[in-house]
Image (tube, rainbow, N blue to C red; front, side, top):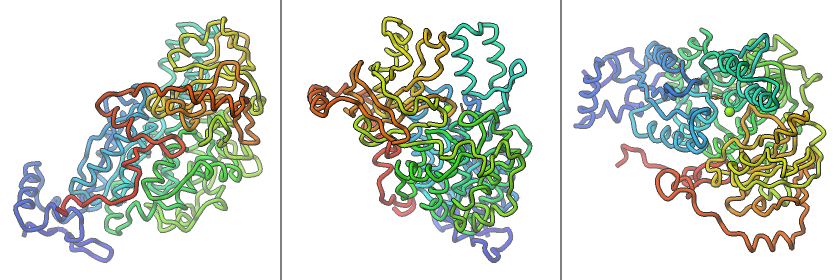
Length: 586
Ligand code: FES
Ligand code: MG
């Protein structure tokens, strides 16, 4: 009497207990099932509370150190409430938190670690479906990469944006305004007093950055992929609607298990194409390029830099949200209709027949969606920019590509030739950038190397190189900057990013010398080092690979396995196709 569900018998569209993956743990004859049931009694659960029910793993990236996820402990309770009410059995798993602000050298070093943890937890425990809680930058791709590799029915619960910042009558965007006011302080326009007020005004509630930074871009991509509930990605973190969304995600996860709708049915080539369209039409973060390529790879979908450039040319930017557009923030975007409203304006560019976690088709999901504020989510005939916000560059300086978020750049710099000033690493750049001896003019091109996936290490967000203080004081606010680093989604400027291959592995960026002329031509999508092939070959012959950064530990594994930016920076052994035995197969 203890081995099958004492609850309602399976009805149409319900899974019988023996059909559940978790049945192998709880319901079969033998010592192991007996032991698992005994240990669940030890946890305080009655047999009728869990036996025969879909087990939903609630993966929570909450941590005391992650302000973007400070509310997720409570939200996990709402998810569990939903799971219980739908007749499931929720189990919460604390997983690694990747706090964009605090984790050094960069949480990008650990994205694949969280992806591995996610994959292995879901596989090795009695799990039938999952709800993933995250949102701060890398947590979204990490959780979804891991979950995609397992393929169970999964709902993603985005952490939601924090409340808008405020200071002396101005509305502030986290990240974006932090950089802006820091430059003001360096230029002598504000002092310590203003700075300490800003500390309390920039980020005033739990939730991820409330500009269209990496967090908002990636959670929107998750919604476009169909793995969140409709409209979930922009619900403000502290809005009561966020708790309701979390509960609904719990309810839905059980339903998905019964329907047998796993991630593989959702994460198709069409879904990724729509996610790219979404990211570009939102004027979203350049980091999305790397993460979407990596996520697609886990789903067995080939997505390339060229797909981004191709799609960018047909997608207008409609989200008038900082930093790509402006002046609005994510809360405005939410109340203007959120992602469903935005998507309703570009239905001709989407694949409407594919399923989502909530509906049998995206068409059905978007029925009734609309925009309530044309200033925040622009109409097609009044876009923020006629083309998508990102461009992919090619040329002898970036044979495998580079990325520029040209809508966040000064238009006059998009076609520019100037002499290079080269910095071998970030610390040297920090130490010397303000030295007038370098004689940097607004025409110079700032080049930073050894900041890529291996060289950074972890490809830190160094890409928005600071301008020399003496130029800031003259009112210069943008210059051409080139690196193999990434840039924060809340940053701006004419910054060429993700140069591949990176300098640390001997990419051409390693060969640039101060004084070489570099030509950036965004309309032509090229980046050229104006140095002859012969001279470059001569320099390459004299190039010595730098020593490995790590002798042991996770960093050594990272060094050995990390792939370049153009292929998503996944680990080679995680990205490759192949099967993994079921833990109960042995
Ligand atoms: Fe977490 Fe920006 S710091 S999203
Ligand atoms: Mg960021």
